[in-house]
Image 1 (cartoon, one colour):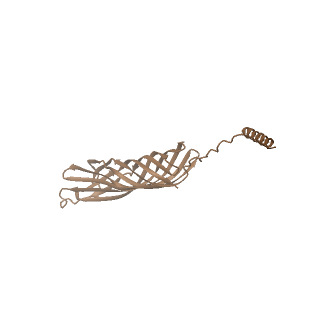
Image 2 (cartoon, rainbow, N blue to C red):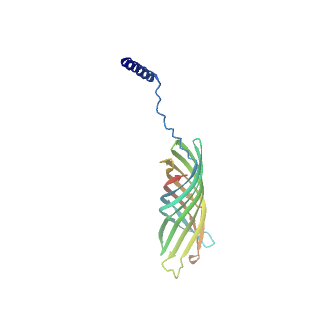
Image 3 (tube, rainbow, N blue to C red):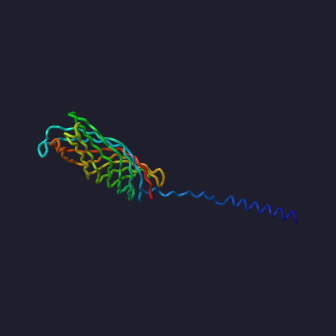
Length: 232
């Protein structure tokens, strides 16, 4: 009797194993990672180097040009912050961004005759639109442009400040800025960027009554900047 039960149990186990071998084997379920979207708010910091060519042209006070001109080449480093919003339509990304940079961009020249001239810019801000394209999911190439704001500081003085008083001109200016760059997603929330920017603040004039002169400036700035943003 025991031998019969043992044989029956062995037969049942063999049949069960054969049936299990015939069942389909389920593959482990794959983890689905959603595609990265550039839509959303972000904020970050940037820094870089800026240079300029700013030519001054002298006029007789209230009159014609005197024939004197002088080039300034201000340059220097800067840092700042930015905040913006993107919305992605398939591979197209539209956005708006504002930024503020601080840093001394300056130059000092001595054209002779005991004169020393200086030009300086300590800050610049902008509000810009951005138009981008995503050739790859985590890469955004874009162009940008909008309105820019700054304050330009000019100081002109002579060797004898008593005989020829110096002049300081602090001029608030509104201009335009355009640029292009690329941005890469390092993680789903952190991106890094590299950008070139050109800013134009038109022309401006100020008087130096001590020398009966009016001076016209043409400030143009170029910059290369890198930055990091955090997406929300």
